[in-house]
Amino acid sequence: MLRLGSKKERFIRKVLKSISKQRVALILQPGNVFVIEKAPASEPGIEEALRTCHIRGWVEPICNAIPKGKLTKNGRLPDGDLFTEIGPYYRLTEAGWSIIRRTHLWVVTTCLIALATLIGTICGLWIMLSKS
Image 1 (cartoon, one colour):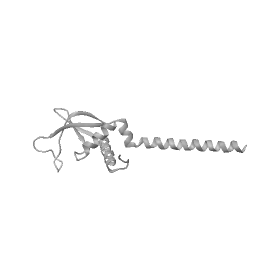
Image 2 (spheres, helix red, strand yellow):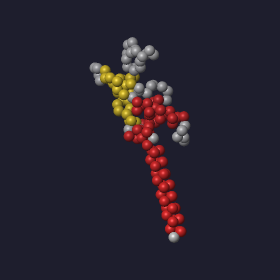
Image 3 (tube, one colour):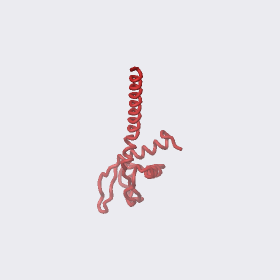
Image 4 (cartoon, one colour):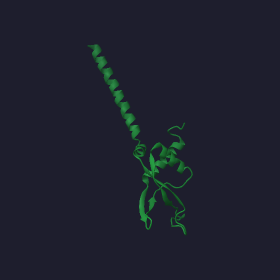
């Protein structure tokens, strides 16, 4: 069982956050090929993290037929074939946005504060009623 703060969980959340930063820079013609800025790099572990986010319901693949390619080390288009593979691109779901914003933590904290306030009020009323 993974702890919430484990290295692997932090990496998965980092990948999830990187999905939230991607944007379409331009659309190449012909073929309507999206050029996506700030997309997660193809590093070891990224695909596994994306699939983990997918099974948790945080992201969903939009399409599995998007041509992918890499720029050269100096940031230019490569000579020859631009696209070296085909794969999906992902969009964040409502649950994914909640994880990034840590909404669940706020809801739990608010409920705990409300419960503590209720208990304090009941104790205060109990004390006042027992004195009279």
